[in-house]
Length: 283
Image (cartoon, rainbow, N blue to C red; front, side):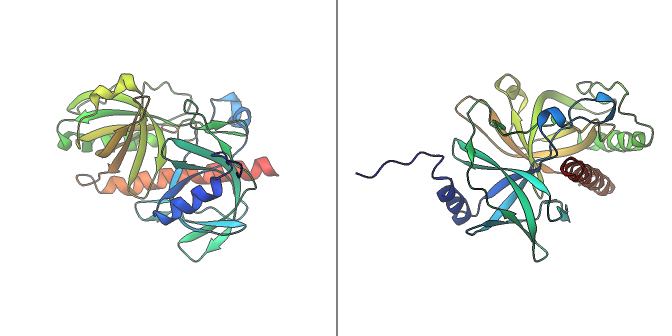
């Protein structure tokens, strides 16, 4: 009788399964070990941005995925950029380190395939012995009246020129003048082309309700001096075996279209910072 292979041994089969289903991987710029991920003046650890990208091909030495991006804007990852990559199938999740090998046309990038991967535990879905991802904090409130959000979004945008990372900012304090309902705390699991993936702990999920609009703060301090504020729409959600909710929310700039370019520019700026930090760490 042949020996039974473990789930970790079958990770290549898992990649093929994800590709056949039109699924994706999660990638993040590896800008140093968790203890190294500090900005100047000993400020708090820099949060990671995790991009959800479609898996297009699996070869002997490389895998091919789409360029990370948001709202039609491509986020460039030059050849040589070190990455942390995660793949998820059902309740099972694996992570590994990789490097961008180059582009495959204008829409795809090639990643070096590792020799081995490491399986994550259920309680440490973004941490293994060789890599750890620090998820950004997100604060959301039910948006009762969407028309009241535009003024607050524009006011937050206007403050960016004067914002300082050392300024005290209460992420949980509701913005003035916005008609809000109940709120909840979350973590940013990933960014996709049209929205965000959120992780919400069981004690926070009571404020999640259907496909409603939410006023959201995304905390990328200290690199982005002030939390980003934007409107999102709940697209889907499901609970795992631990009653943790995994929610997908879509960007919604319907009432404030000028806010879109600003949000994209700040996410792009943050991505470039992570890439520059990774290049400096490798030098």
